[in-house]
Amino acid sequence: MRAPRRPGWGQSVRFILLLASVILVLIPVYVLLVTSFKGSADADPSRTWYLPEVWVAKNWANAWNQLSGGLLRSLALVIPSSIISAMLGSANGFVLSKWRFPGANVVFTLILFGMFIPYQAVMIPLMRLVTSVDLGFGIHTLILMHVVYGIPITTLIFRNYYETIPNELIEAARVDGAGMLRTYGSVVLPISVPSFVVVLIWQFTSAWNDFLFALFFGGGAQSGPVTLALNNLAHGSILADYGASMSGALIASVPTLAVYILLGKYFVGGLMAGSVKG
Image (cartoon, rainbow, N blue to C red; front, side, top):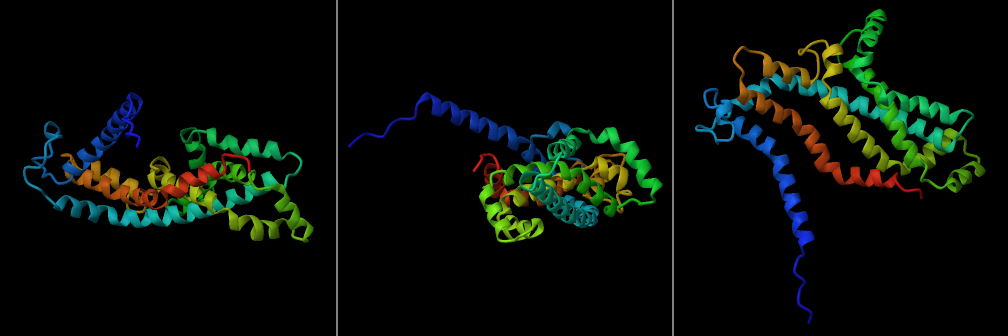
């Protein structure tokens, strides 16, 4: 019977590096969690690494009272903006990959160009456009912004995924008399679940964590998403309430954390599904 092989230096080094990476990532989480249970006198920068002298739970209640409305508004923002941008990206990706037309590559390049325009560069023109058409400020405007800015990345992801679908499948649908919409709805859309998972997670996270668009077009903390409410919680008083701020940061991060925990494996699988030509 062969004796079990001892781990070599390579495995030991990889394990040490992995452990160090985990510790490095968890240090901010430790600081957030510990500080969220500290009272105002105990939540001092000089005691950042210490456990609370007295564990206080009111920070969480205060943070929830100030963020609960913003959380609901953020959900009202991210759900429709993610779904709409995913559907538009799917349709664009299908047409640009399987139903090509003259100049399709030029159109695709122009769509991708939107990914490389910094938000800061267009904020003033967007503000003038919103005010000139009297669109107003609030969640409805933020939904429009995230849908438009989500189209380039969603189109790229879906186009790469649809390139892996055999052309014979599309040709068979055409032979059976299916047009573009019928082929898309009956053949392509049902097998697009992996890419939809990737796009929905990406768009959900991007819209949920956005602050710049929310600051300009959210209409203030009382009508904007949770990022504005969290900013007010952190800077709303002369004396910083570190405990409530840390509690609010943890509360605001729960939805995105839950999405990645529940759909993380599908996210990786969806990325890999569109990475290799089938």
